[in-house]
Amino acid sequence: MQQPIAVLDSGVGGLTVVKEVMRQLPREKIIYFGDTARTPYGPRPADEVTRFTRQIVDYLIQFRPKMIVIACNTATAVALEDIRSRVAIPVVGVIHPGARAANGRTQTGIVGVIGTEGTIRSGAYEYALKQLSPSLEVISLACPKFVPLVEQGNFRSPETYEAVRSSLAPLKQRRLDTLILGCTHYPFLADTISEVMGREVALISSNDETAREISTILHDRNKLARNEDSPVHQFFCSGEPRMFKTIAQQWLGEQIELTPVVWQVPKIG
Amino acid sequence: MQQPIAVLDSGVGGLTVVKEVMRQLPREKIIYFGDTARTPYGPRPADEVTRFTRQIVDYLIQFRPKMIVIACNTATAVALEDIRSRVAIPVVGVIHPGARAANGRTQTGIVGVIGTEGTIRSGAYEYALKQLSPSLEVISLACPKFVPLVEQGNFRSPETYEAVRSSLAPLKQRRLDTLILGCTHYPFLADTISEVMGREVALISSNDETAREISTILHDRNKLARNEDSPVHQFFCSGEPRMFKTIAQQWLGEQIELTPVVWQVPKIG
Image (cartoon, rainbow over all chains, first blue to last red; front, side, top):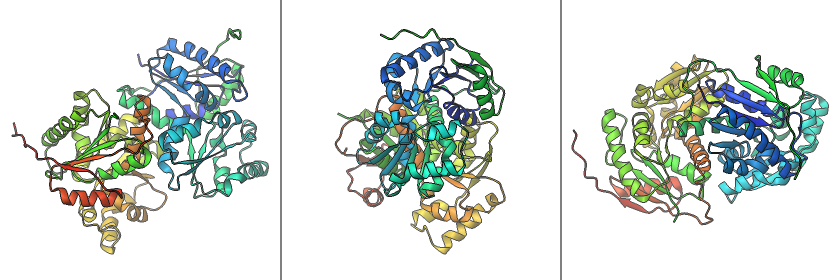
């Protein structure tokens, strides 16, 4: 039996990564966990996000995945190294792939990063970028207005344009040539962001880049799926299943198999 | 002491990969071997190329590299799996990174590949692409006129434009949206190729993509260099050293340390 790739997220945002993996690696079986009962992770303390992430990994590991993908910027920022130290299989987050792509793309050496307040506060992108190239200049900006707009499906209205324009104004005066969309929700706003920033600024989407790195690492480890059949993916969510299923099927363009999971939420401390 | 990344090529073409690694991973120490005495590999039989590649790997392994990069399309096409089976460290070629990038980029599902006759005849790109996504349509085309133009430094003349235009004519009628430059020499002609193919066709350069994958794999294996100092790279070539040194220093924009190597060319059989 084929070993799956396990993908986890605080909710539905990680489905943008799943869609890219399905497109770039159509032979791979995916199991996905969306922690919709406890979304969003952004405002939670780091130790709580780490605890939730561990709990999901413990759940997914029973399916003997060959890789774990943390498809959430907040969870990657605070829990990636913890999870890497706890499991024997590769663990991929969404921050390093975006950082690596931006580092490869920039010519001016000035890279912008936009994300939720939690992600920007963690400094994780800046750290990842400077680990690669210490001389990079990194300009980080939290864009708290963007996720609510995406969750309302409000991608192209005048209100959205105005929110994007005013949020990104601080970046417009800088000589950055590359901008990382450091949140799984932001690719939905890519057209508007590109319009505001100008075509000469390359936008880096974590979703594409993470799918690429999954492929690279599985190839390096001789773990790419070889079967010819279309795999059947499995989805789990901790919250209300109907809404999750509707969103997932609409976004992925196919029927999904969904299993609701009722968490025994562990006591703090 | 820092373990280096070992890069090998039939000659100077692999320096385009080195330059990208230096740019994207400025902390990494590189050792490079250019087999200039026996270049080009393109027209040689596969078993000979494999034997030469093994010999270079045996030579480089004494420096305890943490990774081997086969920065030559022909050697990658015929010897990658052989070398992977012989050493315990990761081995990266230039074909899979390009294939993976193209697979991620294409929207139409039609990908073009141009390369030397040897590379195209091997079918290695087509195989790598279909391994990832069986439904991709791959259009391969050998462009034997390109390497001589590059070796003459003839990048932008009317003669070059005409050679590129006539060579690529068979691709112009096809609906490809992504074109892999499947030879380390071709990035020098990228502007002309883009002019001929049109801006809507994305060009994939193995050099950028290979540097990205090196970074991804070293990160996955916890092997990225952590030191702050600028590393001193080392270069080796089997042929005339003066010409190699001139080209390398011009291309890399810095002085290099070069050691000529006199091969005991092994007898065939």
